[in-house]
Image 1: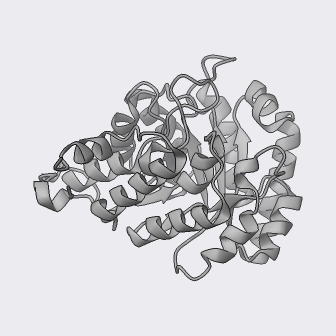
Image 2: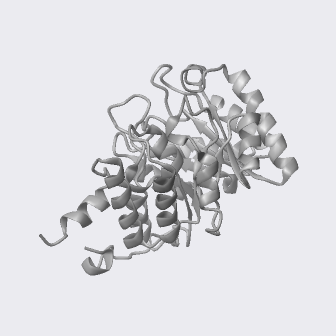
Length: 316
């Protein structure tokens, strides 16, 4: 059953909502790297092509990291080569200079670095102290700027940490200001364990803007562990954020796992934005087809409420 068949969502413009936003699709990288099933290169390329065909302007395609640590991202060079003709942005994660040089050799024109706001998660997830990871990221950003390559900075544990608990906004600002000062094109604020609430989102965004980071350099990466991801997106919209990360079919997390906690499903995000009259350029029917294929390839049901609802309307 398609969205057109059921005639939904009804569009009712929300006062103050923007005309358009950018959705940064993360399923083929941030999503798949947290899944137990490892897709081969051909399947990863197929997923990316389907997502691009749905109208997503940015699709993360891989990560240039050690394959023994993240086997789901092995052969990202082949994946990148296999989607070079799509005509969209296809960023890759490059946490250090070794990964950056490998990505550039594979043709990357769009990269990202990754930092933790908290010290504990930096050790747990990145295997090094913040000072060390920040130095590595700074090197990557410097090379990217010199090479004319677009570079994004991801921040994790912005809204709460399972080991350290409350994360002071001043700590978030410190790292975000570092990234902005180095020259990243955008800072993505990650709710890694999905504990953020709308008021907190607004407070963090407002604080970073007050500290000199332009709104058009901020993005939100919300997780749906406690069912608040869409509410947090709405708070971000009201604060002036215009780029939102999401994962087709909600790929990349389980609300019960400490390290992989429920990515916001792109399907759900597009449904809400479409209903508000906010343009995304995404065809929801094509997106749900891509999500259904990806869920089948991974051998698990999708957590996307929109995808499940449309599937339930299929005739027997």
